[in-house]
Length: 311
Figure 1 (cartoon, helix red, strand yellow):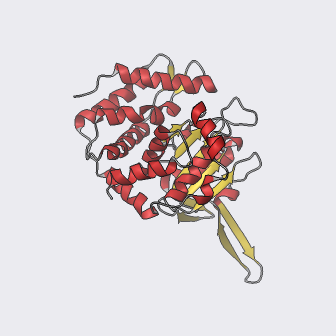
Figure 2 (tube, one colour):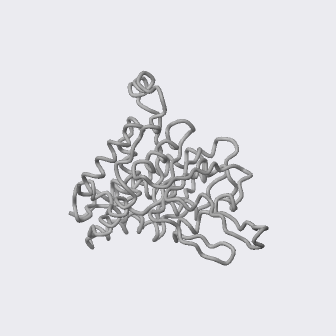
Figure 3 (cartoon, helix red, strand yellow):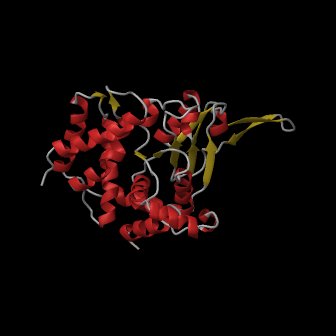
């Protein structure tokens, strides 16, 4: 089974538990293939946590869930030194971050100090603690869920934290017909019977295949021109960084795998633009809230139409 066949099989498999969301599951799988971390932002109860756990089960990844709350400490995520009285020594007890897929549930309910505990792990695949640097298992993915900032008890994610997420997705409510079907057919949690269809090594192979997808100079220039448009737009306080452009190209390479191609097209770049760039924009009109999220997505659409794509 080649990369394209495996990805389509995984998308169908995820559709058993995340019904009616083929585009979002396709983008989520693309994010993992691009070695990225995923931010799922939406109101409670639309399937964010279910998608995260389904991704872990589909690839048979070791999985841990951390419920972020106002009293959560960094050591609750990273681990800590425990004194063994009989031996008279300290022993490091690893925290839940030492799993292949970490679900940071309701990430923005924890204060910034606790949120920042994830930064080094997400950027460098390692944890530095008590004078020692410990590598994380491979592959390593953080899938975080976030409630809209207009809900009570939430903190805005710092820009440095947002920039570590390759994509931000919103699942949205189900189509009424699919929601009615769900009420009739679903009698138990589908995650309980969801079996793996791939392995962690398969995910590493997909990531390696995405790395081999070539990028022409014309398409690279196109991605840079889109980024430059965000830096000079009158409604944008701060445009995207060079890291964002690298993330955009990585996601486009992974998207090309869906069509069994070994090269990136402008269409691949456009397909992932909103998911990769919109959460990295800081707008002049509104610094936070639902308006900012929607407006950023509209701006990315506008910019992609303004910049001519190469033939």
